[in-house]
Amino acid sequence: MRRPPHTSKLTDPHAAEAALARARAVVAAVVDPEIPVLTLEDLGILRGVHVEAGRLIVELTPTYTGCPATLAIRLAVEAALAAAGLSEAEVVTRLAPAWSSDWITETGRRKLKDFGIAPPARRAGPLGLFEDVKVACPRCGSTTTQKIAEFGSTACKAQWRCETCREPFDYFKCI
Amino acid sequence: MIDTTTRLVGAAPDASTAALVAYVLGLADDALVLGHRLSEWSGRGPTLEEDIALSNLALDLIGQARLYYAYAGEIEGIGRDEDALAYLRDEHAFRNLLLLEQPNGDFASSMVRHLLYAAFLTPYLQALAGSEDRRLAEIAAKAGKEMAYHLRHAAEWVIRLGDGTAESHGRTQAALDELWMYTGEMFQMDAAERDLATQSLAVERRRIKPVWEASLDRVLAEATLSRPADGWMQTGGRAGQHTEHLGHLLAEMQVLHRAHPGATW
Image (tube, chains in turn purple, blue):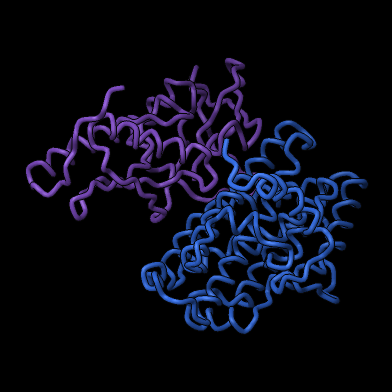
């Protein structure tokens, strides 16, 4: 069994700075288990990495309160940090400010589309009754699309259909 | 802002702590009981899409319940975690609203129940997001965003059903008439909760009533349904006096955890 390299408390400022930079890079590159093309950074759920009293603190925020991926993401972050020799890091959940789909980065939006998931169509905010957003098909780009169901395979997605290329697709909802 | 978690660590529970724990447990039990009821629709929704929708809504509520239970356990400070609070308390210790433990009935009934509650909870959480209790404010801000689409989903269904066929209209009106007597409890507060509201930790429930009525009236008008007249209101949920339905719900929800304490998989 390979042991992670020995780590000391981050009291030495140079060591702390180097560890912090490495931790940021490692955590930012962890992927979402349900949409594995997106990193935590793309998704906007990585809220900060810092050193507090000689300890590395990683702050994550959940997308939806009931999202079953939250625990898997936390474990993936801990595993990635341990593999990088940063096993003394602590992963904490930060609820405020509440996550918004507006925080998905431009890179994230492009990756979603390339993966076949239409990115959020507008800025977050409540929709009126029977109101729908205009969603472009991630495959053919047509905006002649139709919502099949507001709820899909994960909390963050809805099911849509393209009337032009006839393909069904997932749409990442605005919240 | 008061960071209650820090303030109370190691402190013996006093009256104000007990009041806050009871209040947070009420919010938690509301979310868990309604979440469990919705989860009973999993696999038996009227259409596949709606089955998935109801399961998604259930998941949101159970996620919200976990945040409240975890917080209640921390401030209570006697070592009960979210599982202990959800699975190891008996019926009379549950503080949820009677409305939320009512059986699902038909789909119209479940959607009416959801509308009645989401139309209340959405503005309530918006107000609670301004609580002086930082943790509650954070949970409320998060949960409020989710309840906004719960309200929209339920409202759209009530409109489709009410303004649908004679059969769907009749069933939806019947559900509304049947459940109306449980709505008064949403606006009731005991002395302890009133005290928390005075300290801006909780929300004065009466303040939400005009917003709830306006939101409900708009939906009911479009649904061609009539708001029932206020009559006798059933209460008791907050004091642990429940309808006969909660015991059955808990028996099913808690059996595994009680039969196999600490089971993991």
